[in-house]
Image 1 (cartoon, helix red, strand yellow):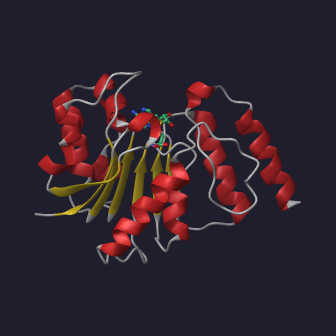
Image 2: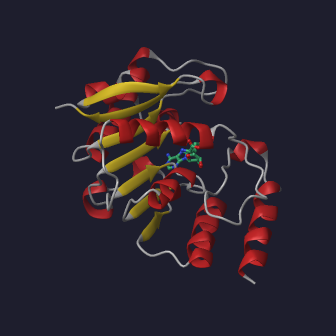
Amino acid sequence: MTQKLRDELAEEINGWQKAANYQGCPFKGYEKINPHRKDHPKVLKACLDHLKEKEYDLTGKSVIDVGSNIGFFAFSLRIAGAGQLYMVERQGRVQKVIRQIVAIEGLKDVEVLGKKMHNVDQAKELPKCDIVVYKSVHHWIKKFSDEKTAEDIFREITSEASAVIYEPCNFGKALPTDADNSLAERCGFDTTVVIADGFKGRDIQVCLRSK
Ligand SMILES: C[S@@+](CC[C@H](N)C(=O)[O-])C[C@H]1O[C@@H](n2cnc3c(N)ncnc32)[C@H](O)[C@@H]1O
């Protein structure tokens, strides 16, 4: 029965448009999903290897994934030992899938905030987390606010974080700006590029708190 539910979910996701930028699911039984972002397993491995090399212990760490999509990174960090997960995701059908995965897998301590990040009142709606996943979403937050506000949102969400997984990007074929590339550095993190051939050749930064 459980596998049937996983298969139905995979079928639904495979029917979505490419534009949804959807991901795979790291739990066993979702191998039928054919994700748009095929770079994720490789990028995830590079991130986890880097954290291990830096002796960063994931055990029990809280995670927020901004623009989580169906939660590949948040769920993968949980599998690697992380604790409470928060996912902020604006698309209703994507939120629904996250909740279905949570129910099918019987997961605890996973919260989905179905909102656009720039509309979240962080002080009231989101606790401070140890790890912030902020991949391929800054351009969206800038689009709906402005560069300074977007940076303030990132600064606030990472203010007590010890690690950030960041993928600077831009719409279409445009390259991320220097300001996008150095965002985590300006907010007090050591930016170490762990993989330079992510989706469309993008650099992925795994950053530990430096000050
Ligand atoms: C380009 S995808 C990246 C997904 C994921 N972070 C990854 O690296 O695979 C952007 C995701 O962020 C969501 N999103 C876009 N703007 C958002 C916003 N302002 N607040 C929350 N989620 C947003 C989209 O629905 C989509 O799932």
